[in-house]
Length: 180
Figure 1 (cartoon, rainbow, N blue to C red):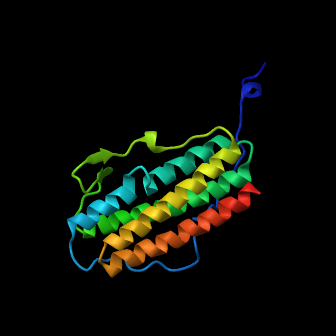
Figure 2 (figure 1 turned 45 degrees about the horizontal axis):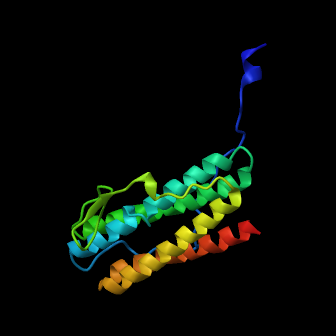
Figure 3 (figure 1 turned 90 degrees about the vertical axis):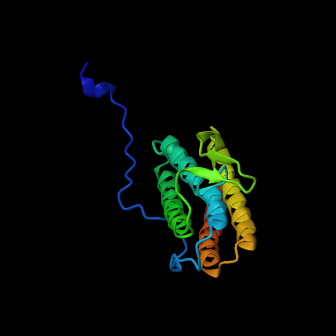
């Protein structure tokens, strides 16, 4: 028996996958003034339990687990993960401009600090449950962004957050379509 007979192969080709997001420009990443309290709020969006870091990791995990059997869906999840990576990057820029630090630690108003952990992820086995968990995570992100927009009195920061929300809403629409 030759060595090649015992090889398992994943033929899913990810060449050409692009971020899946609304076809709208992002506002400039800028802030009115340094504000460490705002940077701390954004650190939660960056790497808290409900965060871009969690979304990226959850999508990549799901994509990896289904790519052998469902390449088309895996490519879609990778495209969504790529959009979440862009969100993470924009949040990181805002945090730095606001005078904060990007160290994968969510900084809460009560002084608590919590480093990002994969314990935040939902990793169901069934494909339907993966998509449902992704939809719930997108909804939670939107709710958190909306709460932070109410707390942040910087139109430049809020414009970026509102633009990110548009992508998250688009992801929910797409994931719901995939459920059908």
